[in-house]
Image (spheres, rainbow, N blue to C red):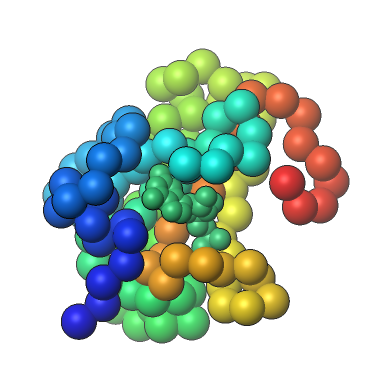
Length: 114
Ligand code: 5GP
């Protein structure tokens, strides 16, 4: 069974600053923010990396992006803009092996990286 720090957050075994949750996903502030706004959107279905998303799970990724955009609009920074990032495996810098989408905002971001 997959078990990561994010699963522990979903199960409320460790604390997190949760900003949104529904049946399919949870969103909480990154513990080491790389921008004034840095929120992680994590699905509740177990998928380790983007490589592991099956065809019938593609909507899971879309829901993460949709939830991030909705959050940006609700928080009032959508028009200023934001960045979404998904890291995959070693070269992508992935450190937690449950897929997640980073939402970064609150200031002009560099052209590459964060
Ligand atoms: P990755 O590098 O896998 O794309 O992103 C993992 C992210 O999870 C990192 O930005 C890291 O700061 C964040 N993170 C790691 N452990 C915790 C934790 O215990 N709580 C929270 N809120 N974020 C975490």
